[in-house]
Length: 245
Length: 245
Image (cartoon, rainbow over all chains, first blue to last red; front, side, top):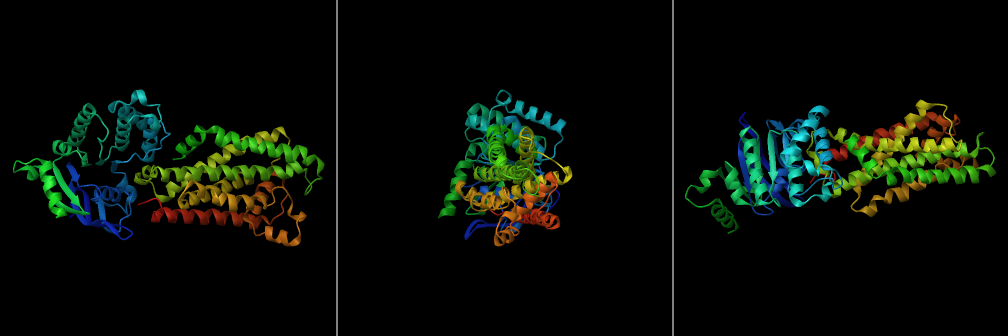
């Protein structure tokens, strides 16, 4: 499964919470440069898989390689290659916007001079300059989401994982964000996107996998999902409904 | 991480710095200037000089413990610990980040209380290096204990359990306010089993040059606790005890 083209290899991953199997012997490879959509209903195992990739969750069995690096054995090097924008706001509520970005950049060992420029550039890019001195708890939902996205990009990751990145963001900002994500992807960043907005996945992703009950139940290029003229949403419902039956 | 921890301390200065200095000032005033003037010299020094190192240690212990326990517990509570888990830190680096945050707060409190002690003429310093060693080592030990409690605690109430039932009683029974020669023989022997007695004695001997304990035993107890607790917390982080899903 591992070859130089793959930025991420998930090899027979199983994750249990006590006796409950959240991810069940899941295998998946994602090639460099892909814009990959990971879909599935609530509780399907998407966020658990992401937690295992990023080190937030412990792996019960199997292994995960990021750019050839085992996320358990070579965890320091592997984590340096990933940026995560999680579904839930896992941020110090009382931290100021610019501090949150600056500290995160510091965690990745980015030197002070580079860090300063990087933080400024992200604040500008996500239109957070005027809010830079506000604490996280004082931001609106959309601003919080943008800050968390900016934080995920602070280390210029090779693999960017976006778990519901546009939840709570208004239409204009969502479209602007789509444009930015396309640019990033074009510049070489591999992106994994989970979203309940299927039109978002359809607009952005090149490849898609559908996960249900902890297993991949469908996988392929976006075009292969919609080749018969049906929308991604129709196809998604068809597959997940079929799984339930 | 250390910068962020110091930032947390400075964000709530009244709680983290002013409050312990106020308490210590009252202790120094009451035990030193009010009661102390009615008490004969203890182990050859005025009571205020005898009691000051213990009061200093008490404040340093509380500062270091509160710093790491509140920071790590809060990070677990709001999941901002994920920021640390996804970053390319080794587990030892994560622990040093929290520990040094506690040590820095302990040092800040120590400097302020020494300032107050100078006003009362309570400060002597015969062995500055020994003093610095004990202040840093004791802050480190209590930062690590704070981290253990932060990992173990399931609620805010449990966060104060160890402090209330173990740390505070052992500290007060460790000879802060009295010489162990004042105790009945049984209690004196029992005190020799209390590690806090060696902490007080270590600081006191470095400040006034008089020791009631065997300094080799004191140094050994301090180093064993420091190294043992570091190893324990590294292990807990490594297995992800209550921090990784």
